[in-house]
Image (cartoon, rainbow, N blue to C red; front, side, top):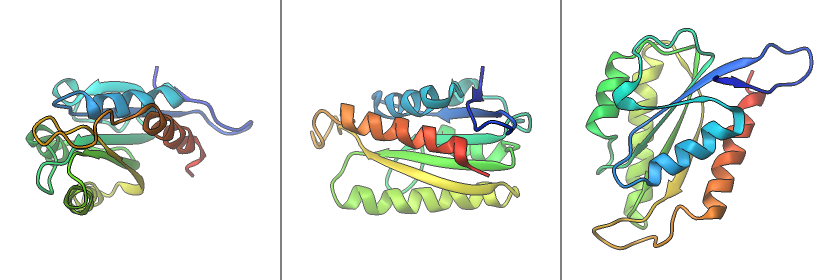
Length: 158
């Protein structure tokens, strides 16, 4: 579990996707990313703190006013990350949601880079907002296919 396919002659990479989700949007994106490479998929509540045995960490959260969920925030504060990481995020508000999503991702990135882990990319996806009723039917099948392709691209990371 947690092993990804890579080119001939290359060592297999081991990855873990750690996520938090309130309504299921972020979970669906996490599942798509993890399935692309058979990465281990784990909700933040059950995630180990020492992840050095992995080659790459994928962290996902929903955007809450420019920040991750409190559980993801605490996880990032306490985790011992592997050498590389990528981030993904879902957001539910048009325009402002995307702008604050970038702020959220930058703050998450800084937390892991302070721990000497190397940032390798991000994925952002709209998700249905229950309160404001925006982005109905998102993430869509097309969004999840993009997430899966993003996950596949992680096998090419050097």
